[in-house]
Length: 144
Image (tube, one colour):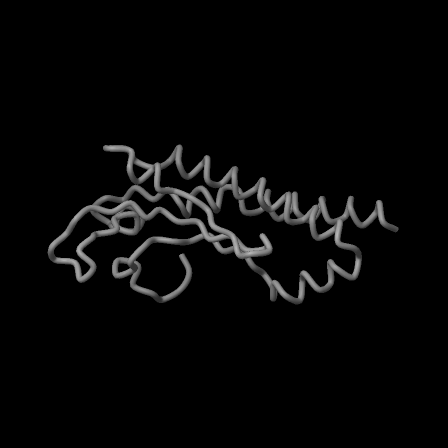
């Protein structure tokens, strides 16, 4: 688990950003090879995100189904970075927002102990990196 943030105080629960280097630098290098290389990498990344989402939904504990149904991915405008989230909530008069977002509690609470997002991401992380790298190599080979 990365970071030093108190995840229990997050308004929503979002994890899953996969970056190794500066996204801008990587995209600039890929664009030098050709726009079709960038598109191939983004398409493969999207496929990987879909696999992680499906796995997270299958791992998610279900009582009402709201948490599982709230699992989603949002990308930046050019589709190079994705944020995965599980933002189901219930009314809570004790919360400053009037809602308690319980995805983080299910993922991180020692009492509940039912992580679903991190295990799904970790199970597919290397596979996604490998598939993106292969897509880049194939696209670059076609342009060369």
